[in-house]
Image 1 (cartoon, helix red, strand yellow):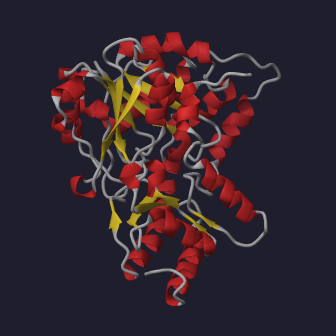
Image 2 (cartoon, rainbow, N blue to C red):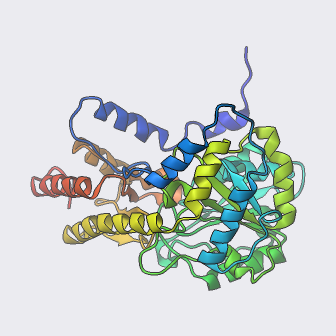
Image 3 (cartoon, helix red, strand yellow):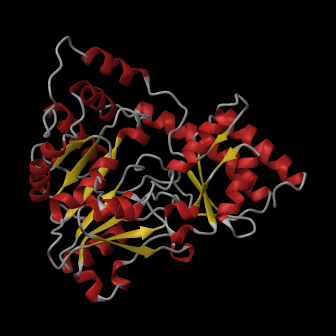
Length: 391
């Protein structure tokens, strides 16, 4: 009999995979489907990025290096300088990745000792499931912290007892936050970094929604480091910023010792983006106009969804940034409301898919076009008026 990794058995299926399967089944009948489940917006990748990729596909294919192309590392460093006022050395502080998901998953393999006393990985629940899953597969212990609306969906490391902190190897923070869309300021990052350093914890900041902001630009954890990047890493991605979800292009920026360690790890798992993707990524990091255009489109979608939810008396929380809207389930049961919405051919993610702390809430990913969002709202409103959905 073939054996199985017990970590895989303990985790089961990926939480959002079932939603993708259900959406695919509904879509197969050819009738309109309003799919707000997975964060993969319908807007096309900007032409300048697509053209850069096409132009970079040569007659001979070569293996990419784990360190990435110098031009790409420089483009990421230049973006951090422009966007966050943070100066980083492209050779010491920057490492390209195949998007941010694989980088998040693989981080514990480089820094967590499965036989040591610091095996715990802290992360906020509800949150991105990969933080805990990466810890488990690396032989560590996933240690989620329950986030609450009254705290702005932000964790507070200082509120934990010293023993729990001393067991931790990594603390994941994520703002703008998936799934709630909550934000944090530089002062909050400074507080978390101070606690992390006191207890020898790596502060890992997932910043893949950094450019999807509306009221004011979202800060980076690296801003809070005030020039000393020891013990802090930022994980960035072009998936949301530039509409490049399928390209798998991102980066890891921060502590030079940890970047060196990750450079040792990553050739073993073979996750460097192909060279033609790196060229396209360089073009994307070097251009801001398309990012501003995409942000305006996401704002227009929010301007359809948020007034509707207010109109029908549905409570919205967080939702200050990202292209996610986080709302309380009418009736209190997120799974039941998600199922009822499916009956109206509207696909939303129940909050429990992001951990027990998400129960009672749902996430809408503003994936459809502005016109598609309006059509979904019209269907939703009609279902409430007809009594098929609670208001």
